[in-house]
Image 1 (cartoon, helix red, strand yellow):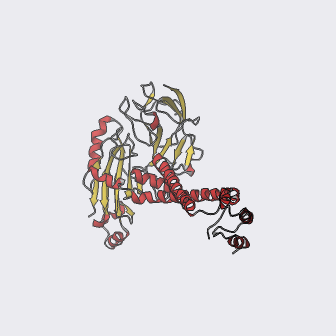
Image 2 (cartoon, chains in turn yellow, green):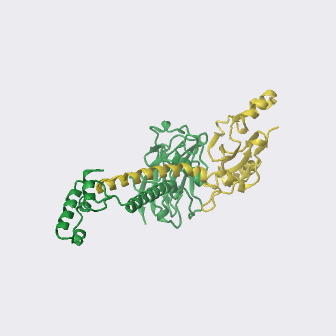
Image 3 (cartoon, helix red, strand yellow):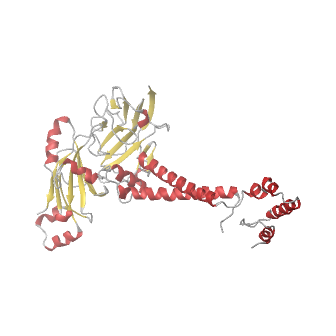
Length: 188
Length: 255
């Protein structure tokens, strides 16, 4: 037998059903978007050059932003890494009053970040490593391990973004060179 | 089976309608029609009280239409509202200081689902907490939405930071070409008052003092936003922003 309701009540029920369905669909869509995206900052960063090395990004200018959401006042260099082939070492010495580095996983979430003050020295030396690789490394630790900032992560893919503030156009070339020669690669 | 149905059946009609007290009246009408000498057409002409009073019996086709309508409208509203929020590209505000809004958790594993969707969909790279904090304004200090057609004065002080930059963009964060070629202003080299406060004029045409150039050929529909990026600032979390001061945004005039 079908349910027989007065028409006012029936419209009310339809309204409530529509609204509940809308809420469910809304939540599903919002939660589904991160899984369904076709490109991420990680895939976009492949455009700038080979993996496992710092590639200087073009200047952040109107209509030609290398990645969305970057600061036009900063210089950027990106390095895509995969930890499957071993830990990745980052070293840099950028002669500017401010630089910072952010490590992001393949979906663009922050893994770790620091700037030249929190790094404790003007030279960046940071080792990104998986927990398994770290336990292997600890069995026979290299001498300079305690001089490195060691970051453990389970995310084996990601990218590093180095940001530097060039204080004047006169220093631009020097800063560019320092960012291009920043190291991102195999840890021996 | 109810009494009413039994009566209707006894009146010689095949009744599939659900039991109603009113169908008693209908049954009476039918017996009257019989008394009229088999003028069945009268019964058909007579408005069915059953239908007039309570909307009638369930009609399978109408029920199906209603369900389809609910499904379609529900999906449309759900998808539409999600698209509106996500394509607006404004991460949820966790903290605000006057017109300035910030979401320090955007781009981290503590982010809300909307920020996650917005950041992954636009593939934007967040400013991580160890680097600094970005505060964005979409409205001026009196609550009016920012317009690229207007001239604004941004004055006051910022929370302590080793370096900050101020950028003008549309309300989705995309930069627009300006007369000066630059779209930002940085704290080193800024003209300041004796007490450390500053005034910045944001306008399309050059201005004396600290000038933040706005879009050369502005599209009003794209809107305007100002973003302060405070690098190496002690205020990187929402709680530490309590009591901090950010500049006012005053509209000076519009074209």
